[in-house]
Length: 458
Image 1 (cartoon, one colour):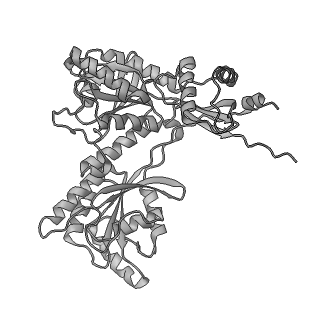
Image 2 (cartoon, helix red, strand yellow):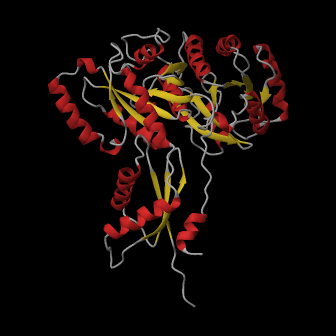
Image 3 (cartoon, rainbow, N blue to C red):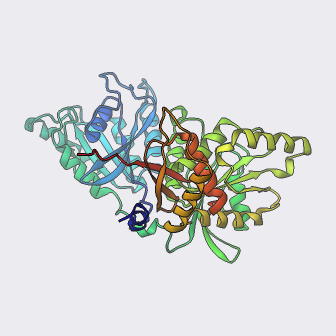
């Protein structure tokens, strides 16, 4: 079989999106062993653990797996103990965790028993009607199991005895957590086939996402406030535009860094990432009346890294004068060189100007996202490309592209089979030429290499 025939024979299945993992929030008062339990669940030491109450100041999310099931663990630490108001402060944090979580793991120190703070949290959890698993921690041996049974008084069901420090009972606890989580969505619910196409509205706080959603929906369905960061949770809206139904996911504004986010903003960022994971195309809103910010660039990079299709919507265009347009064009050329392929629309969510151009841009991006180049046509392109501009000679060697295949779509992924390592600059050149010849407007492209090892002659 020739190398070209080998390329034709390669048949890699199209990758489907997977559902974003469910979220498990770990709540409890200070020093009950939440971070120790997180480390036990993860099977590695990641959460900071000290025998001092309130060590965990940031809300931190971790990826975890048990019995083949993925889920996200949120360690909700950072509650400073004080003489007054501790129960109220912990209850507030528990509310935030419950709002964002699919299930809650409530950790109580069995050796201490139920305290006023524990009862305050339990009250919040009962009224929230979310699945709750009650962990009676610090049950290090059979003699201490009687302490756990006393926690039935919290009214949250059976207390499960566990020792986060020694691992005792952790398997049974994790089994209970998996039972509390919602059933996994079938893969086809997240693939391209069937159902309305899914669009995530992203952007920094107060850039106009909710205003745009309201304009598209034709009514005020989402709270709009001049105070930055009003939206806390994603809101899905089925909206008919251009004779087709679309699912828009409005998301809370992304702030600078997750670790800098406090309280509700942490969970908003977590939910924003989840919304991006279950979307097919992201419309990133940018305030055209202001200079591009680091946050704008970070959000755009996050979309590209996620492999989702991308549309850039420059909002508040009604506030842009000629001088600002001149500087904006320069900013785009200088700062968005890595996303020049993204369709751009200039709109005003407030007045509705040019909002109708959004759907054609989204359709263009989705078409590029699902574009597939036949292997024969792709390799003819590669042959002509290499002949016109071969890779530079480095160290007396000149790597060559032997053949290529498109491994998948959504986003398009190409594998180049080569005789040596291709420099990053040459791979960018290949990507640029791919876009010039085949389009791929509105989608990131992933290019990887498989270097063919030379066979040793016997």
